[in-house]
Amino acid sequence: MIREAQAQDAEAIAAIYNHYVCNTTVSFELEPVGAAEIARRVEAVRSIGLPWLVIEQDGKLAGYAYATRWRERLAYRSSVECSVYLDAAAHGRGLASALYEELLRRLAALGVHAAIGGIAQPNPASVRLHEKFGFEQVAMFREVGRKFDRWVDVGYWQRLL
Image 1: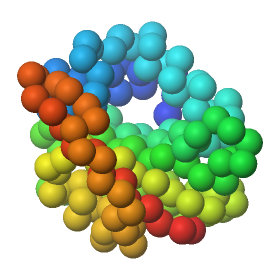
Image 2: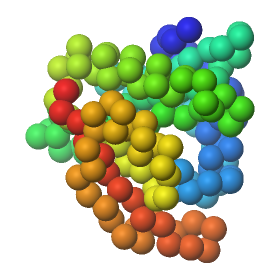
Image 3: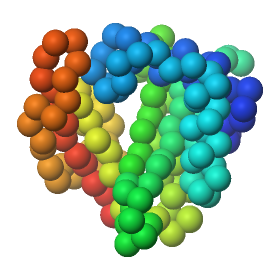
Image 4: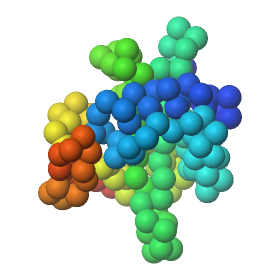
């Protein structure tokens, strides 16, 4: 079941996200994020009319996807950056695809013109997901992030809706 995120989802979202914060370069945050901060982020996204979706499986929150403004300047108002995260135990079930399909459908209905995904490299699973949905690589920034004592490249994929 895919639905809009609610305040009571913040703890489960934080648990999913913090796996990536603490163990991967998928997120460039360096410290775990608390439920209160996640709730603030969800509300910030929703307050500007963009979706923050969660997916449940077997009664448990198994992942989430959302979009934020690509940049703050008004001329960028029709472009968003998309993110999707799954519980570490939920991979390989098609949940990320289901979330992305619904997120992109809702973004198109809102009149969003460009969807952008930033992917820390290497991350072949995320690249495959984006390309499955018609995203094309448009940039690769070398060594723009530093985490776990190493430099990390970030690529950007884009799809016009």
